[in-house]
Length: 414
Image (cartoon, rainbow, N blue to C red; front, side, top):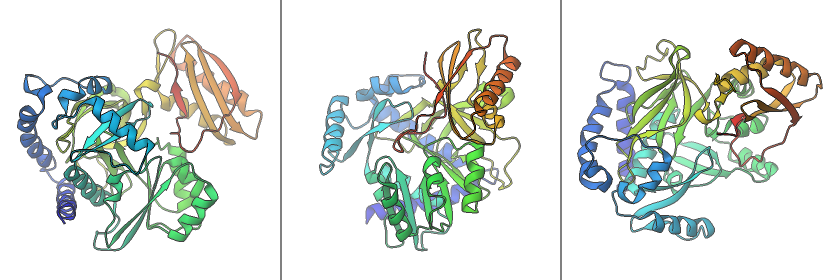
């Protein structure tokens, strides 16, 4: 009963703060949350008790000081042992006391540990429902969620009105198709690569939500044509619920829930990444945590009227910016545009920088001439940016398993 009350309370509060995002009071909710959060942090986290300033955190430093950052006295050694036991034996409950312990794996593939308590999970659930449901929670709605791993957090969504079904990625596609068509969900949440596979299946969702992978403009266009509706997005990671699409289908940062400090990568092109502070994460505080994503801010204000930052696209990771021999930065979107513009017959691609002067290109296409067209397009790009032209090497396209996050553009060297 307490959990349901917390979910409903969080749902109502999020509806109110989202409505306030259209007014001059848009940023009052996060200021109030931070006002109460910082004294809690100083009182309960040994790491922050002795610090005058709040340092920038990376995943490495966050895990290094894990024992002193968390507020429940859980050691990294004990947490890893519990998470590993749960991973091997899912029937075992992943708890230390009343704290849930799970492994988390980001796009980088580096494992972390996530600590949460039931009240944090309930607050998260209520906020997600308020931001993403097309209708209120008093209407019956069926949600299909395609992810690499299930979580007890997602299971808290189930109620008499809201029905949740988890579909693990990597299972037999025909079985997934039959199960999804029989379920006929109102809402589908899945990575873009999975949405493309199911776009021809016999389902009629009211809302389609992309998650977990970069949603490229060409994939968005293809999916919107297939599903005959706007494709929405959820921006979610281990460190927090960071963004969601508005009614116009445009992605906004959840600046009513999380404090975002913009760090500009290239102000002229509106590219930035963020430091996040989430006052709702009290078991394992997330304070000035540096995310590695490249965000591109849209120009002007969204037609929906929200004052929260409108993100034109999430372009990729800072680790995937190409650096050439002379130090020139080439952003993932530059590479994407060059490949996509080269030919309309390219079905799939992957571009990997192996060294400062070596780039590997894999193409999935029925037209052999596409190799030369992509070569010329990339050469034109590099000539326009720098006097140093890297060597371009082509190979056949290797299909990735559905269970891995699709990264079309990546850098494989430091």
